[in-house]
Length: 351
Image (cartoon, rainbow, N blue to C red; front, side):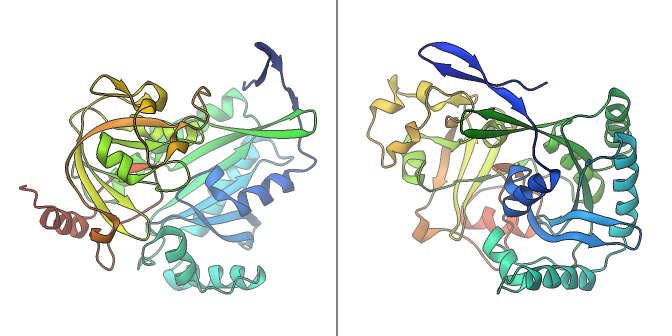
């Protein structure tokens, strides 16, 4: 069970757990910002008619796979599991033209002027794949599941390789503020990787990482001091923990291209504790001092993974080509052979 405290004058004050007025409110939040579930997700349908029920939310990932998102509502846990599996039987039959049609209908209903292809590129910084829906995933959204239902989800995912998981959301009220926390029944990255093992090319052993240049981090700081950063929530920063010392990684900046190749040289560390030649990073000149944001908050702080850069480029020199692999994950396994071949050549790496 998730609990929350507020620190007030050195004392821990429990924050009261509350309830949403309706689960429709949570559905609207996810629709507006699906990154609260997954950074690599774009919504292309809401209350999608299947002929035997309506899918609460339908999403697409940067690799063109679909995501069925179903809220528990007033159904029993077993009923919602059965329902989401039933919807999966419908989604698996969707063709690429079907997905285009559903997305375009949804965008028209929301007065979104972009086409599906334009929206996809602006969201993921990559071209819309063809074909679409080569795989799909199932996400159940609930405040809790009974132990029996949890065992069913675990069995389907871990034994049969079904890409199914449960996201638990809890709401807390603190005076005039409302907080929403999220947690997973299973590690979502492991669920995705089990599916990829069955449906995609073997992993190259090379990782993909996102630079995330912006108001909290600078690529020039990362190049100069040897790290990759992520923060603003453990949902994001914890992904760095997938990387192990000795792993190779290419890093990408959205709308620019690939800008770095290096070898992981240390374990993930909170930014405030990172040192360079014995000197604290926070005492060194930083182009983006906001890297120090929420430094004492273990959830919101920036975390870094040390990297020995073998070759880096400025954004102006970034390497890319039409159709190059890119997505919004903090890190993920790089499997696309065309992208790997291009990067080996562009970065002068001997295979």
